[in-house]
Image (cartoon, rainbow over all chains, first blue to last red; front, side, top):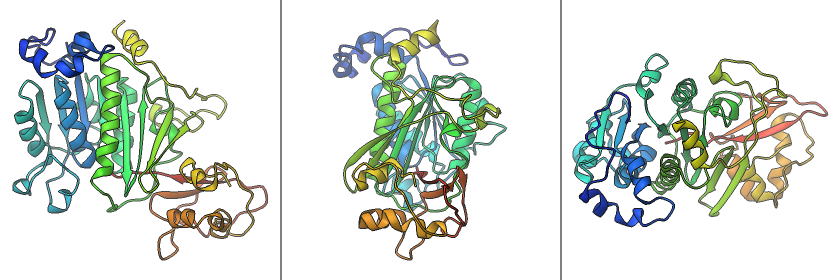
Length: 279
Length: 86
């Protein structure tokens, strides 16, 4: 059971659960045990834009028991080409509130907690504390680095996603095991402002993030760890890049030499990681 | 010059290319000349570097002088791509 959250019989599946999730329970490596693990899990989605909307939609469909949504923006007309949980009638409303209302109708057994506030250095750890993982739905690197740092400090896995136009990237960060964002990027990228994007790009990247989340939470399959997956929608290419910890690990607050901080690029087994955490 | 993997796809998989020129903007012309798609991916219609690209010289960011940073023989130039939108 997640610390601070009420159990409400989350350790077992109800008759409705068995019906609702029948098709995914049929997946051999997942089964009823996997579904129970999802039901007991708590995922924080940071950012309710194109990535965050699609990610929470599929987390809720899949039956993740507790979902916390955090964003400080209000819905605007220009969001509606990609942010599929916000409708015309929601313009002006806080994004977490707007999204939580739709998700409650989609799956009332999921406990969705909307948090309408800005993520800062001083509140990030408190927001993610106790979660099983965090999903990156943010639209700027400054906040990403804050959440990344908090995840490393709390030992919470962080599934990074980013998009631009028809391009996207995704990787799974396991604190202490794989390079984190501060290791991957030599410094916080400087580029800011409005970026071009089609709705399909964050939808695709978010679905890859949720695929990683389901495997991690249920403990099966291989994870996209130690490598970044890039998507080029113009050419329909998927490319991988191995990630190595050779930079200053800012999130850990430590300066390391290039040779000292080498990590191995690999695919982590979700099962092994789950077992290690469950201890 | 070390190319980001998403650019390598456009140069037939070549990771490192020898470049000549001064400053960094001129060095970029080598990989750009190999494929019009690369140029289109790196620069906008005004010839400026696209917002998701950064150029590093010897692992140091050249922002905001990505195209005008001086380089000398033996310097390593990295092309980095960050997709930061959400």
